[in-house]
Length: 497
Image 1 (tube, rainbow, N blue to C red):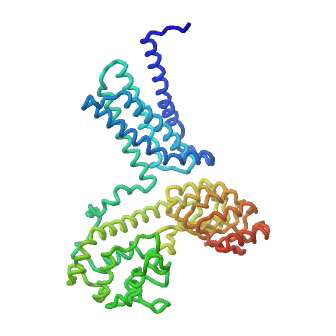
Image 2: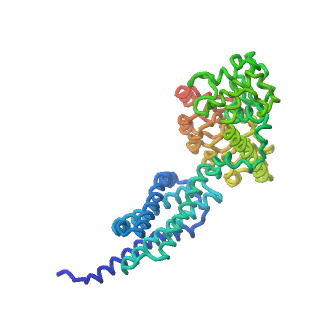
Image 3: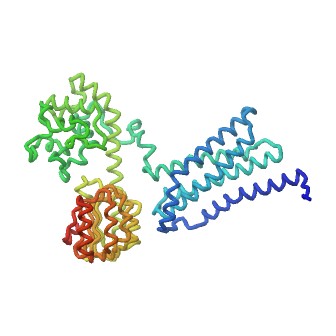
């Protein structure tokens, strides 16, 4: 015979089961809170699991907002008070929040995240998860007592949503930069930086040059003259390149190479800007053409322009020009702050930090001084917060090992990497395969193993690799050349930069 349980006893057991089940996420969050925040591991499995975090996190965000909406609607209108729906939403929310936080923690400890933004994002997630779990417990307690949800419940619900907003902001800032939300507002609040009266702005120096700086100068400057075209100064615009053509021919936009290039159809090799980069707007096209047609005077001010069409274009462009000027000044300030911080870190490390002229001084180069000082994992990790600022790195004759390529793989703007005379076997080369701009890799005088050379086959943009003094078999090198003819294999020591 089955033992008879009175309904009250069954409900009591169900209540205890729910309480115990909901205590589990809170116990997990407290455990994560007490674990060292800067724990680090390089397990490929943990990296794989952690990278599900960006896919999962949208579920708890939507569910928290949906649960809040149903609870509030039920408070305002009894027709929306549907406990079975709200319980289902709460249960799903608590589950997906727990899964998202666990995946986020694995990503945090395994994918080289560090710094205040990452920590604040992590702690905000723990607070959000804990608060929504307490909400569910309070909701169940109120229903078991046939009571309405009280102020404590709604306080935790408000805390959940506030914490969710903060955590989401930290996550967005971590992914896209700290100014991700504020950047579009720069043009609305231009008073935060010094701005000229628009009528006093010089047409070239303040407006045309801003357009060129934003869209063109990165590829057309004294250090990187793409297509033999210099656009970084007024004098350069009027100078003839090796082709004998001028970027700007005052009074004649049709003969000006600048206008010829921007008018080329999409997909043309010489079109400016190239495919994948933001092109000029219709107003910017018209402004450049009219400025050149009217003599390309560097001294004329906006308020002195008589041409009605040019004035109309200028008025439409001014908000965008102000935003671009703000961004240029903001980037300059951030670059100067980064340079000061990098130079402080480099002090005593035997490392030289300098702006990369080939990248128009928008990124930095790092190289060892001579004679090289000890430089290994800990010294490299000291630059973690500034990895996106490096375009050129030379770590020749250092203590760098294959595992350290995991960190170098975070330098997303890296173009040139020198690792000659290190102990690399090539086992860590897969860490660099997703670098979108890496063009030159120097592995001369390393104990590179034959099998690991094949990792370079998956590199996105590699154009040149130095392999002099490595123990690679000649047939392996030839097979590599055959399969990757677009990568120049150079059997020379190569420069140290």
